[in-house]
Amino acid sequence: MNCISCVFYVAGILAVFAYEDISYKKVATQSPPSSADNLEAKNAVDGTIATCMRTGDIGLTAKHKTVWWIVDLGRVYNVYSINIQFKNYDGYGV
Image (cartoon, rainbow, N blue to C red):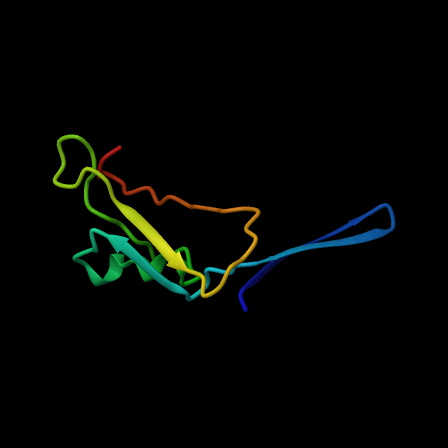
């Protein structure tokens, strides 16, 4: 289990806040698929910020008008928060 936690000690009270990364190492798919192994959808759920996933260009003048990315969590969850981190590709796009 990949779990993130924070511990706070304020005025003699210890509080622990934690959440489980339910997408960690789950099956991820994207469309269109990436042509590069190092940019596959599975990289978005591998638990490391050193890897990433990326699709091709999208938009009115691009080959693909829309793209999608999905993670199969394996069962039904109550999801209260989603955190998406974007990587800055220096010199590529805006």
